[in-house]
Length: 86
Image (tube, rainbow, N blue to C red):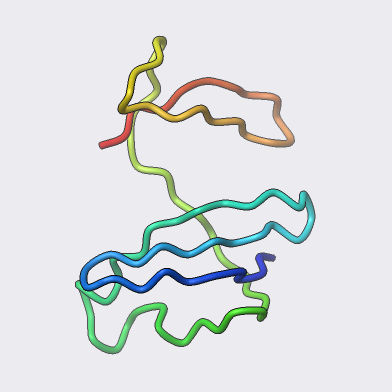
């Protein structure tokens, strides 16, 4: 479960901050769903409410850091590394 903390509206891509209820980590996500569909998107989400959702990270694992990579830790199974963003 995630709690929606904030929405940064934009013309194309909006940014949402979600707090994982279990781990208390905050994930900043990019939402392009309104570009794809008028009625099948995340516009219904409200700040302060909780949602059951999944976060998908697009990219490929990389052995070295760069300005296009992000550090990534998968909780529960102890995997750490970098993801090169697509």
